[in-house]
Image 1 (spheres, rainbow, N blue to C red):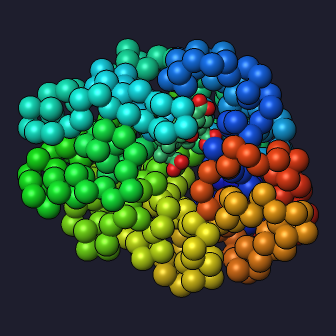
Image 2: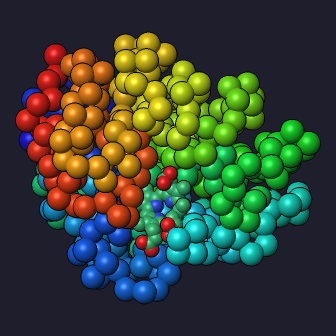
Length: 343
Ligand code: CP3
């Protein structure tokens, strides 16, 4: 059976507009809250049976066209012992942030089979359970976004320390991003070899950079990741938030699919990246908290802005908000499937 999601990623003909949601597995789902327990999410990720079930929950509930592995962008750095936790409600926190060349030693290469066997077990279990036409998306954090957590020690609004290192010590910065590119590559290759049929590189916070900063200090490392998985032949999705001005560069880094947040209409994004690439997006996740008729209008507006281009994967512009009513997302999937037109 062919997958509408994979076909759309490649701009090939398919029957219906595919849809999945970033953060589709998570706290919006009562069945997630029921089995997730209270512990650290990194502990939950280390339990393949649990992680596989959580990965499958949104596929069963929403009828989305792709699954995304239940994991996190900090799993590889945590697995090699950098010292990262995920604080509920906050995100990744690092007790001893990355400060100097000596910290490079804390970033040894990832041996995925030895360091993250649980990830590969989860991938295998999920792929085994999924129908043929619903692929699993593997993912990794892009070098810049992971670096921002390692340097800031946690989430940041300004990325001041990150940018200070980038501009003040370009040599150290380049060495750091190079190591993070290798970690992302090793993780992605292992997920794809275990059965993931697409991949997404999350550079969630790249939108904090100007195009010239991005091009000089970040693009080479992300390009290294995309190039290093090209031979595996799976669609490569590149996503960030607030990246309206960076879209051509996200494409240039080597993506087959460019993620777009809600700030840039798909018609504008299309002009910026060209016709020969797919777009993913871009309903504002907050819209899903509004009454259904508002949601429906906005879903239709996203479809209209894409104007039937075969390279469109419907998604939110960022992750599902935890307070979202899951029945709204069920209806979004139904509506996209019913009314999305592929030229
Ligand atoms: O369904 C999916 O999208 C797959 C699972 C997934 C998670 N994290 C699970 C998770 C994915 C793809 C990620 C990637 C991730 N992690 C990103 C990139 C995507 C994005 O949102 O831009 C980033 C920046 C992180 C770092 C991170 N991890 C944050 C900011 C948080 C939120 C903290 C919180 O509690 O609100 C996490 C924790 C996290 N990762 C949760 C989930 C479901 C929530 C915590 C939990 O349920 O215990």
